Image (tube, rainbow, N blue to C red; front, side, top):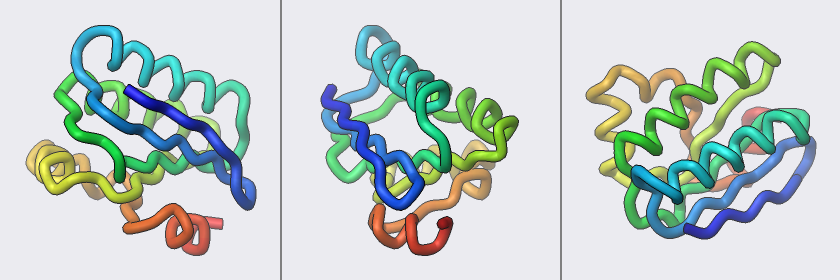
Length: 112
C-alpha cells in the first residue's frame, strides 16, 4: 500500500494506493489517519483514485475515524472512491456521512 500526505489550501490530502485489507495495510492506513488527525488541521481529503481494493477492515477504520474527525469539527472527504467502495458504503447506509467528490480540487473548492 502506498500513502502520501500533502496539504493544500488548509486541507490535508491523503492519497491511498494499492490494497487496504486486514493486516498490515489496514493498520498502516489507520496509523496514517491517526497522524493526520493529530498533526494536521482542517479537513482530511482521502484520495482513493489509485486504490485497487479495500476490504471491510479498511472501511471500518474509515468509519471509526469519521467520528473522531467530527468531534474536532473536521470532515473526512472522499475523492474518487471506486464503485465497489461507494456501493459498500451505500448498502451500509454510510455514504451520506461522507462528502464525495471526483477530484481533490473539487473537494477543496466546495469544502474550504
